[in-house]
Length: 204
Image 1 (tube, rainbow, N blue to C red):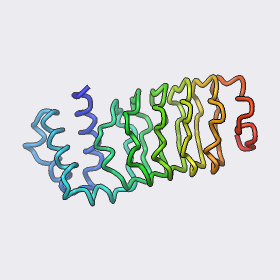
Image 2: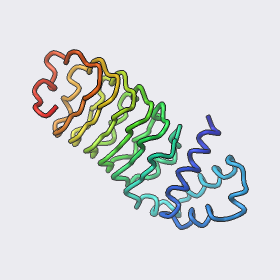
Image 3: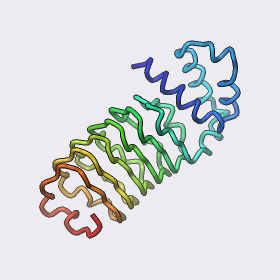
Image 4: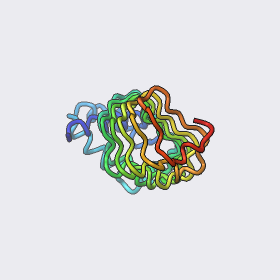
């Protein structure tokens, strides 16, 4: 839904305006504030994609987009390649876009708590190889995709409390060799996969 994506992009830009001088100046411009959302979003996209602003965007390490009631995640989030922390908790996300974390190679902490995801894209962590902390509490997950933690070799904490999980994929922790803390409270699990590395963990 293009209209919703435009609305969410504007919300995000308002949140980060103080970190980008060009953006801050624009958001306070009276002529800009009188434009419709479609025109605002088009101008904001041009600014974010302008090569002159890339260095400043890539210097941003902490992006807190919590509590904005976002329904979508605009593609422009992939421009923030320097992020080490991304907070998206308490939004209205029902799905994660394809390529959501494609450029998140230095991301260490990701919170998606209190969204309405239900499912996760296959391989959505494949490029997030530096990720240490992943919070998926209260995201209404009913299942985890096979290969959910492929390449998550740096992951230390995984929070899956308050979901609707009834089973776990076989060997889903095999790649998570650095995992120290796993939280699974308030799910609907009745058994653990036979032979799974989960059974060898002492910190669940």
